[in-house]
Image (cartoon, rainbow, N blue to C red; front, side):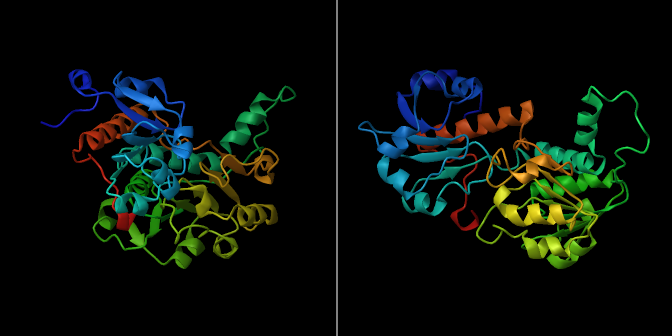
Length: 331
């Protein structure tokens, strides 16, 4: 009978004491799910090795897991990631050693799509600028001509990456009567009628979209895909929204495009590097909205991710199939 996340008290008492390596500190909610029988070792063990056997690796804040780490921990049975993206894990190296890699696909889609649309609205209607303006001690009168923004309703949204998150954003766009176009590595004919999105080339998407939203995984193919060439194809009135990974965008090229007025604005939940250096020019621009990687940061989503990732970890340690396992070919 499968074990349900959050209901393992008897199983924890019956299982032997196990050791895992995790980056941390882990939140109390995750430690509660792990239970008293799981000893959590610091990440330094992953780099320096450990004389005692280690059963699993748990990644919370995307530490790098490569062949060197795996060589230091030869007894590891499973790697469990608290999140969907696994670009920080060498899945090929793990698979070659017979170590399954678990993640939490589908769980964060709704929360991340919510944030993506919040960023669209915030950038278009200059919400963060308005907030800062309203708090200024010298502001005693609001001029109707101040902080005039751009409409979202009826505009064209271009989504690069129509996976679960991209499709969820497209569904939200329907409520704003937006025209939705998308580009994807493989055309999603099955999804198109469900979200009322039209497949176009990347070049056409960049040329026609008022808002370009990125929701692709970080791979060798997508790293730096939005550089000076792509930005030059966008409308000067367009907004770039990134809820994917920071490295999908060439930060230097984006900075120059915003400084030169090549595009209107940017709304970023992710950056490269992350966080940006405190003296980075993007942090001084009023037409840039930045959030600290909050895509999955809703209480409900984070709790479900915690439950799935811990269950994946414990199943792997027990030698059972994971709830979700990363396919090496598709990672």
